[in-house]
Each structure stands twice: as C-alpha cells, then as structure tokens.
Image (cartoon, rainbow, N blue to C red; front, side, top):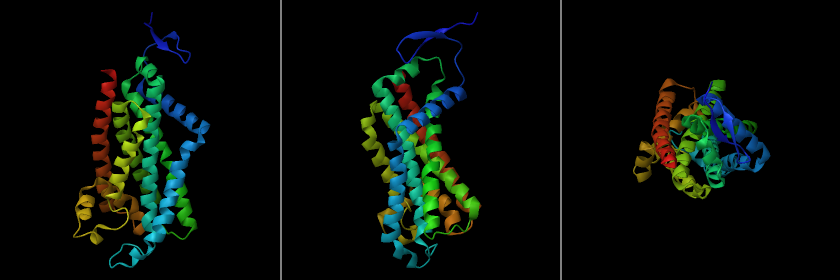
Length: 275
C-alpha cells in the first residue's frame, strides 16, 4: 500500500493523496494557475503594456538629440530606447509574480501550498516561470510599436531573440528580488520597496546614455559596476549593429550572477516562512 497524507482542498477540507509530485509538474500547475488569474484579471497586464510604451514615447522624444553626440552608437533614438523599454517592462513582469505571492500569503493560500506534499523548490520555480512567460508581452508590444514607427534592427531575427533572452532574464531576476522581499514581509503591500529597487537598478545604468557620455560623474561609476549595464549592452547589440559574442557574453554572465545572488536571497526568505 502507498502511504498517503492529507492535503487541504479549496474548501479547507482534507483528502488523501499519493506520493509527493515532482518539481516540474507542480511548477507547471502553478504557472497555469497564474496564467488563468491573469486572464480573469486583465488589469495585471496594463503596467507591462503601458509603461514600456510610455518610456519609448517619453525618452524617444526628450532624448532624441543625444544621437548627435560624437561616438553615439546609432542615429535612430528608437533603436536605443526600445531595448531599455523592453527590459523595464520585463521588470514589471517579475514584479507581478511577487505581487501574486504576496496576495497568496495574505489570503492563506500559500499556507496550504506549504502543507501540501510537494517540493518546496517548485513553489519558487512556478512564480519564476510565470515571470519569464510574461516577459514576452513587453517584448512583442515594444518591438512591434518601434518597427512601425521607424526603428531598424540591423541584427535581424537574432537581435530580437537576444533581446527576448535578456528580457526573460531580467523578469526572473526582478521576480527573485520581489519574492525575497515578499517572503520576509509576508504582504503585497511591500510592492513599493520592490519597485524602488527595480527602478534604481534600471536607471543607474546606461539606460539613457552610453558610459562614454557619463565620464567625470558619479553616475559613470554607478553604471559601470551595475550588472544591468552589461545586460543592456547585450539587449541592444542587434539594435545598434550586429549581434556579437563580445556583447552577449558579458550580459549572460551578468544575468547568471544576478539570478544566483537574488536566488539565494529569495530562498533564504522562503526558508523563513517555514521557520
């Protein structure tokens, strides 16, 4: 006979279940649940659509003259701001998964997940998988909009693929940062703190102007050590020229470091929920 253990149902009762499910099935089930929640609450998509387009319009107009600076990598401002706007939207994608975890902690659903005989890692991977999928939205919306309004993509299809990879990496990183905060505060009201961290990381980089134009200021040193700078270099590589290994590898390395560090931060916070 196979041992069984009680698992809480939606009605708060218990029922016998078999052995604990694997990491992948549980994570996929949580991703599906989150996607269904998004369909039922379309407003959760608004920040990922509106904000990136707002950045394209605002920065594309206000910073259009920076393309006249000596050595600027492109003469089309849309090519410069589009990848930055996509990564901003991707960061909102990651924030959304953390917000959902905070809501589950407040309404008690997360406690039921902790009682279920399922791998703990799946609870985090489910949220991160949802974040990565949401990164497709700002990528498709922004790239479509800028191509229709005059942007060019010298790197072709490979450039868009690299941009999508960068967006998914940023979404996962932002999700880990958000989960780490939410697991410690146990409330979705910590969203303000999460957004401050995301905006600070994004704007203290080469989001608006290249490093060469920041020399002599403290912003230069902040952007130089900011891993987002390398990720932006990767994301922009095919929009300001050809996709090159020299541009992509530092970005991949920066994403790996961010995911590793923030993954440790999120896991430590998760362990506190069980303590």
